[in-house]
View: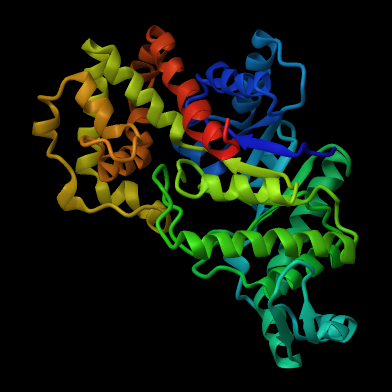
Length: 415
């Protein structure tokens, strides 16, 4: 199974917006941009929502059937490891092998020695075609990289081999994810990470590295755009060289995690993948959940009341809800409106505060991030929440489609 050049991860917490999401992908196709959807949901999200991987597959299949989508589509077992993968095996054909927690844990000394002995020939001057900079890799530097990453890739191999033993090697796409760490990987580190991936015979088709800066959930990139450009271009060129040098899949491409709403760097990514004729995978993830809340607010009445109830619940449970997402959110609690104030807002003001329109005078990124992690509150409301999604599916779906197409696809590809 070979994933297409362009793919968009479309997360859907409550599995009600598959058709609205796919509509955006189909609109892009009409404009000449062939993007495949990848419905993604993590084990943590399933546990909070009390859903199953089977429901994600059912949503994707239903959307595709109802809208007559004839191209490929995927269901991603997002951020899985050996302890969580089995529940996804029957329903997923894209597996994000998350090894971030293993980075920095040293492999066995004999494994390290063996790797250094086999690949010591890459010490010295490392020249990546297309990059002006030349990297000097000493024996000690290579050993440091090996100690930092070898065990993590060994773990990725174990997960991959387990999936392959259950599904067969041609029935799924493998991604290696190492974005949820503190420091971006250097070009030399990326080179040797890809060497390790090849060494352990993982046919990775996408890789999610860490970039400098903050990739907070649902809001724009926070960092130096010039530094991001440099790192993104370096990674593209390292991958291009490693594919040839290590016989990796020729369609191996970058995956940008927490990629939703990174509006300021979308033009950078779009420019560089066009310059080098490369593919990309972008995860939009939780933005769909936020568009649901925006749609409910605009619907007014009981739906607006529900949106306000969700915010009030999240406001009183900030520590609980924000804790698991501490590395990917930045909320200034002093800039959060009091629920009593929000109670007086009309639907338009609520939507304006939540909708990500940079420069809008009522947009509040702190408000947006708190509701982003507050989906647990909506989950606890059960059918009271999902019944309103069904009742107002047209206005909610309109928000979802517009968000993915106008704010994401159009910015990335310059449509």
